[in-house]
Length: 510
Image (cartoon, rainbow, N blue to C red; front, side, top):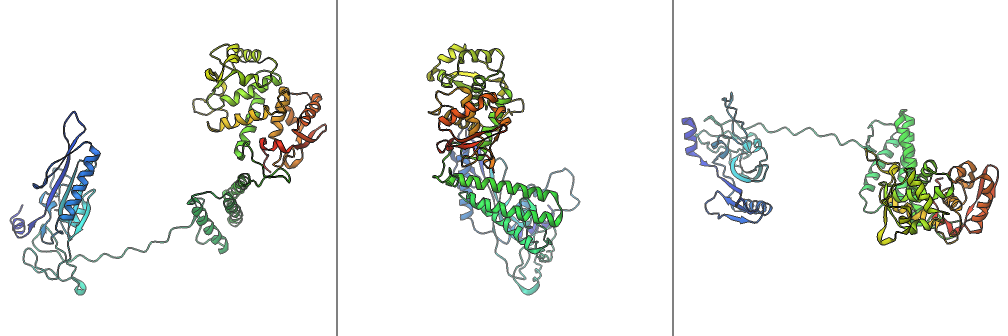
C-alpha cells in the first residue's frame, strides 16, 4: 500500500466486516454449529443443517437491524481485503488498478453452498461487482462541498443538489461527480400473441387484429380460471376458428388455415363434453342421459379396442372373439392382468376351458397354471395372465394409446353390456353384435351417423356372423329390448337403440 493510501486510511474509519459460519459439530452427528466473528456473539448448536441455515440467516438479519447505518466516511472494507471477492487472482499485475466508487453500503455476501454469510461496509461499486452480493442499506447523501479525505473540496453536483457521495479511489485527488445516468430508452410494449403466434401490429383490417388481440387475452384469462367452463371454451374456439380463417385469407398462410380447422374440432369436442356433463344430450324427448362412458375420447378408445380385436383374434368363431375381447380389456395397458373363473364363465361360452387351452397353445396367452386351474380360481386367489402382444415395446408404447386409468373404465363398460340382464342367455355372437351397435349409434339412439344406419360390411368386420344369420341376431336384440324399428336390407342395418340402452352407448361424432 502506498504512503498516500496509508495517509488516506488514517483519515478514514475502517469499513465494518463480520462473518457468520455454519460448520459440522462432529463427524458422527448431523448437528451443526453457528458461529459469528463478532466477539459478543455466542456459538449456537442446531440438530440439522436446515435448522442451522435458518438460525444463521436470522442472526445476520438481527445484526443488520441492530447495526448503525453505513457511514459515509468509511473506508471500503472490500478494498482493505484487496477486493478478492470480485477480482480474480491471476498472479499477474493488473494493467489498471480497481477504482472504488459510489456511496457506502452494507452488502451481504454468501457462498453457493450456504456455509457462510458475510456482511461488509463497502463502496457500492464493489458491492455491484461481487457475485451474489445483496445491498442491505445505503448511507445517507452528504452535503455538497464536503471535504474529501485529502482536504480537497468535492465539486458541487450540477443543479446544486446534495447528492455528492464519497468517492474512493487509488488516487488522492477525488474524481469528479459521475455524469447522471441517462434514462433508459422506453421499451416497446410487448407484442400481442394468440396461440403462440405474434399478431403483426400492421395487420389489416384493423377489426381482424382487434379480434385476435381480444381472443388472445380471453384465452389467457380462461387459463387462469379455477373451474373449467366448456361452453365458454367452445365459444372461444369457434371465434378463433373464424378469426384464423379470415387471417389465412388475408395473408395466404397455410398453417393459419390448419390452426383454424384445429379450433373447429376443439370447439366441437368442448361443446359435446359440455352437453354430456350437463345432460344436454338426451334420448329423444326423454330425460338427460348419464352414460357409463361420458367423454368422447373414451368412446373412441372403445371403438379402437373392438377394431383391434377384430383384426388380431388368433382363433375363428364368435366365442373366441368374445373371449379375446375381454382378455384384451383386462391386459391392455401392460400386457398382464388378473382373472378369476367367474370372469370366463359369465361370458356364456360353449367350452371356455378348451378356448383357453387353444389360446395358450398358439402363444397368444400365457398362464402360470392350467386352464382348469384358471376356471377354478376365486377372487381371493386371482390368476395373473399375460398377453405378450399387448406388452409395451422397447419405446414404452403398445397397441393402444389410453392409460392405466382408462383401461378399467373400458373393461367395466364392456362387462356391463355383455352381462345385461336381458342378454344373459344370449350367445357370444349376439353379445358381440350388442357391443358393436352400442358404439355405432347416434347420441339419441339411431344407428349410424345421422341415423342413416350401419353398412353391413362394418357389421361383418366386427361381428363374425354370416349374413344369413344376421336377421336372426337382430330379432334376438329386438326381443331383448336392445333394438327397435330395425330394418335389414342388402347393404345396411337401420333402427334405433332403446332408451334403456342409451347409458351404455358410445355416440358417434356428428
